[in-house]
Length: 131
Image (tube, rainbow, N blue to C red; front, side, top):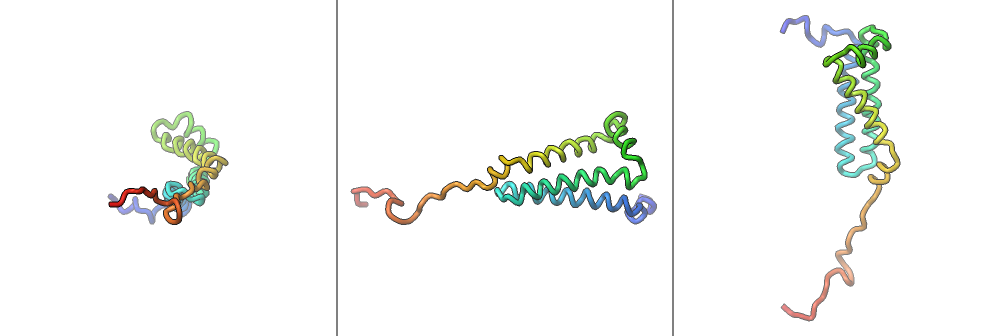
């Protein structure tokens, strides 16, 4: 690969946009792992990650000097397969943002089942048989 295609040759705003995508992906990954362990912070991290992904998506036309309306037109009408990932990112980011902050999500994450009693009277069944 020629040296002209390195990260150092990119404009600063493009690097900021790449960093936004990277940070959004890492926050979404941490949020999904925390949600698997039923931590309430997982839903908050998923919401923050979705907001970061939407922000990085909106930063992309700014970093290239393209008006947002023209970028949205290319994304939804004439983009073809090259813009399909951005449409998917926009759709899934909004979906994750809405689902992460729904009250049933927090209700599910805060629910703790009662632990069975392992000590004390009645913990183990007693029988009249002797072994």
